[in-house]
Length: 258
Image 1 (cartoon, rainbow, N blue to C red):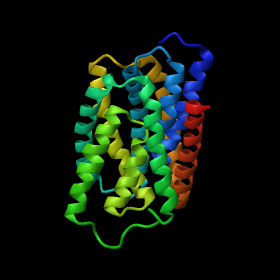
Image 2 (cartoon, one colour; image 1 turned 30 degrees about the horizontal axis):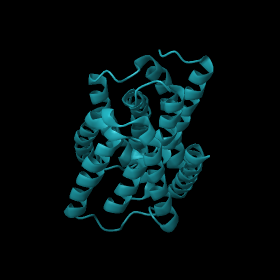
Image 3 (tube, rainbow, N blue to C red; image 1 turned 90 degrees about the vertical axis):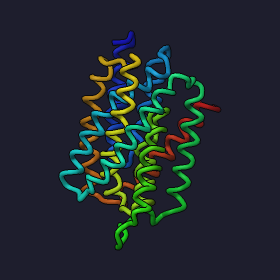
């Protein structure tokens, strides 16, 4: 366990629970968890922060994926195909993550958030209902390449917002409603987390004791969030997505220029 205060450990555990809830509902729990880890581990190497983040997130994501799969009609075969591509992409991204400086993370996260917020605001009907006709093989291939390899690479390299990007990409490419897209994204995200975590663990960039403690809270938050999303539907998912993204844009903006 790193040398941090009990107060900070409590803060990190609360952040892990909140991130698990957010990740299960709309994805992007890392947008809360990663800044919290950067604050709690100011002297750690950025790759160690990213690796610890993955060790926490994979537990909550897996719990949420199981909860969704039990109650939502998810195309598991397609999700696994995309997930395998994402696993390869995330391992490649994680292999390069050691070269990223901590000072570069915040501006990158801010750009990601602004893009997501703009997309959600200007597409109010996005993900309200699934398409009536089946998607083409071309769209499936695009989903494997873009949502799998592309977003998987981003997840291994930086990470925050991956779940959100997966929800948006799967909704757009496969014409899913937001709840089904969230369920599918959790299966894919399990694969990206596993690939990145394997690479970070191989490099010795994971604080396992801290991650194990935070993972318990992340799992609880993830399972609660998945149940709420299933109960309340796509409108609730969209509202949470927009609220979370907007709040984090303001927060990171104040940290950057305040």
